[in-house]
Image (cartoon, rainbow over all chains, first blue to last red; front, side):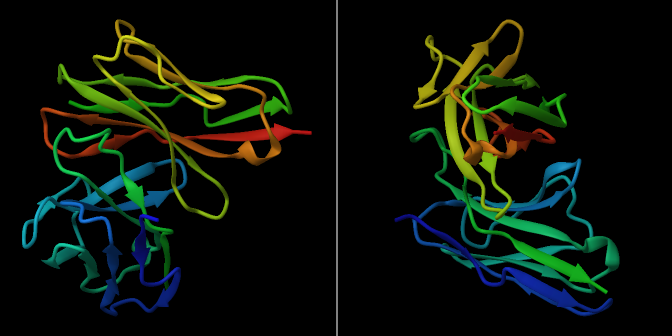
Length: 115
Length: 115
C-alpha cells in the first residue's frame, strides 16, 4: 500500500523554537509538497520539490525553509516558530509529468501549535 | 492565473439523497486535470475522482461523478445516495499540465449528511 508518512501528528512548540516536520514517501515519486491548511483558507502551498536538492517557493514561503537530500524525504523547517504558524501541515507527493492522473498522495497531517 | 472557487462553505443533505458540490476554475492552460478530495474529521486527504480537460466523458467512481462543463469552467462533484460516512470537507483542485506540477485548491465545502 502506497504511503506518505509524516513524523508527528501533533506538536506543541514555543515561540522562537526551531521546528522540523519530516515527510517520507515510499512510492518513488519525484514531486513532493508542503501545504498549510487553515479554516476558510483551504490548502496553501508553502514549498514544493520536483527532484532531489531542488525546491520551489509556493504561495506562502515566508518563515519556512525546506530540505530534500533524498528522493523519499522532504523536510519543512520553521527557523523561529511564531504563533501565526499554528496550523495543520500536510505533506504530499505525486508523479512528475503526465503519467497517470498525477494525483497527490497525502500524509495524515501534522497539527502544530505554537505557544 | 490559476484559481479554484468553491462557493458553498457548508452543505446539508438527507441520507440517501444526492448532493452536488460546486467548483469553478480559472486557468490559462489548455491541458489540465481536475481533482476532488475528501477530508474526514480525522484529517487525512482522500482522493476521490479525476477529470482530464480533454476527456470527453464525465468521470465516475462508484457513487461519485464529476459534472464537467468545460465551456463554463465548472467541475461539480455529484455524490449519489449519500451516506453518513460522507460527512466531511470536500476540496476541488486543479493541476495545469503545462505550468508545472503545482496543484491549486479551493477553500472547501463542509458536507453534513443528516440521518
